[in-house]
Image 1 (cartoon, helix red, strand yellow):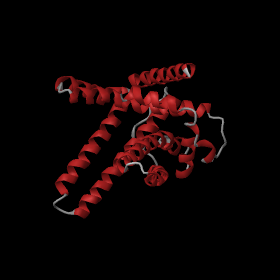
Image 2 (cartoon, rainbow, N blue to C red):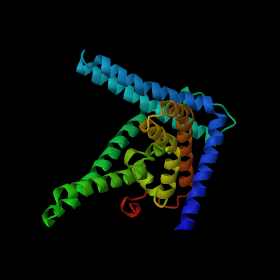
Image 3 (tube, rainbow, N blue to C red):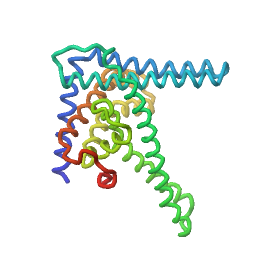
Image 4 (tube, helix red, strand yellow):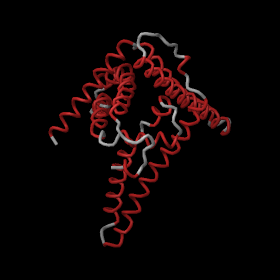
Length: 262
């Protein structure tokens, strides 16, 4: 177990080190795309606030437009990072990394599958917990246990299938197959991905901690550092992690779900 954790730690260090090199070399272009995502996300909230008393239909329409714009920028960011990893010597314009209409549609359909998987996993946990009602255990205890197990199951499922956008952008795969491949390449890599996410989220956790103990100045600077350094670094690190897992994948050309769950 200790040896496995050592190997996982070294793998995470390798990903972070390479991600830092790529991010530092191309910081302004990567940060620009991240900033556009930030602006789009906040602008959609402001637009919804101002339009909520004007027209509900218009508010929904604008929300849909901003969501589509956000997803398009997000996919463009991944395509741009792929270019940097595959061909660092030649420059590419951000406009040329805009995903195709087919890729955007596939991403939206895959996102729907993703949400259905999350709901399905939680429903399965609730279904398994239901017979415990007849054991005489207090309902409050059963509810708390079911919610805790459900949250853990959702977290594991989220990590296992959250790499589907990379397959759509990098391999041009259809929605459900991208979900299956995400499940396949993350098999045996959960600890490495978890440690990587823990490192990338550490600054946000520090921000929440200092906000909780009412150190506003410290939390402000940590939030600034996280927004301008960690967010771009995270996008690059996850893309590199995907590429590393794909290079080590020895499974089928079209993996099934059953053999890749555990």
